[in-house]
Image (tube, rainbow, N blue to C red; front, side, top):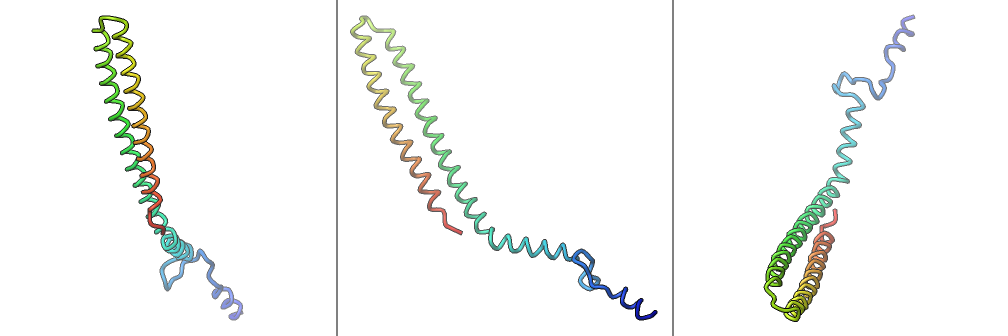
Length: 133
């Protein structure tokens, strides 16, 4: 009878049982090990990703600033053109002014497209140069 009582009281601990000596349980230990493993493997990846996203956001902000500048400049010029057009004394004078306006608009938009493309390439290069984890 004594032997049977001893066997039932000395059963092995399960993963979720509290270890009286350590004061922790198996689930906590496992979670701590998993967190440490995740940090060791994914920490550098998260840092690199964060840096890449930061570079991308800065580049997009530069792109947005340039587009805003261009639109403001074009609106100002278009308003000046409209005002000048009302002062034309003849159809020929108005047609010449309109030709100049179309040429300037085409040149401006072509130059702006080139500039935006360069900024886009710079963004891609900055993001691509993010150090690998």
